[in-house]
Length: 541
Image (cartoon, rainbow, N blue to C red; front, side, top):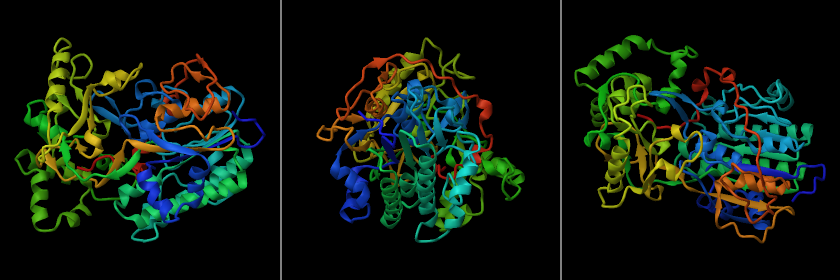
């Protein structure tokens, strides 16, 4: 446990997508000496992520110690019937570790942790991270203006337009430096017991520059420099490095779930319309909101939709453009949402079951009484679910390998009051080598749309006198991080937490805490979809 020396008792460093597959080459090349020193003087091990192992669900699991069925975040998107929205803190149903510490009169400084917008009140300071708008409200009110005045500027997302074709990855390194500057300023101002600083671009770099290790080294080198300054200036007593999932190459196949379900008679399709919620839809919402300039899409939308209805779909056009090597050129001038107007889309109300979003890792049944236009009666629900589980469990790649490690009922992974919002059937790709896609067309199998994506094994490392650095971390799970941080402060874990205390800390018992008060949804920024320029791993269609 910590001794409450008056300084920062624990610094939590969140590295999105970090894992030994990524870190070991950086350590070997001397790119991240400060980070490596934390691993060398402490103890470390793999940190098993949850299902689904994606940022907006996994980080809330880490900082609440609960599974998505309790905290309520399953994906980048939240669904209401067949409608969707990007998730944020108004969807969070559980208490974060800094809120537990606040109840024990301990202050925290939290910078860039995903899905913390809009913030809930607690003792300390918070600048939201991923899924927040570019100018988010912070805690306390007015904090962002203070930070920008103190350090000269602050952004939530890399300024991609400013980066351009530069080879030094300046935009990504810039936001890393902003994180460090803001964190040091706030730590000096608030003198917190807990500091929690997250770096998102350690994930984003793999999506934007897949396979470019110069980019990875530039980003991680910048992170290491900020960590070095923080350790030197703030001298935290203990350091805990955590990630939400791992990262690696996808060398096998893309499995198009909805195309498979269409061939099996479960998915109905239509031509034209908004269709599947994809990153292209989110990205282009800035046009819908009138926030940026661009062509008048109305007439073009109508034309493309009309062509689709007579059989000239976007998929067919793309194949023709591919043959002429014109796909990229056309893609640069035609908004993705316009292209979607001409694509075959899942007809949600008319389907029996479908994949709503590939990063949900599962299938939702169109259940009568639950979905607005349910096609499956409650009496037939389990029969349909069992048939789908049997069907998908037997799917093999063209090479004869299983597509899925497990196809299971949602109850195997999600428990709690929000479990009803989850998929009905969970799909776990075999070794996370198969890339799941929700789009229709071009056959059931193809090459992965993204050559680098998430793996389930992240990393954890702990150093400092408050941790037993001789203890093994070979069986650590994402849900264990929050209980372990509470134990470091000699605080009991909540009885609602799904994780336990890791052997690096002494457990302080279990207690019941009051339910959390959700943030009023009216505090949300209606234009947030237009600001999420980093959501590169929500599927393009």
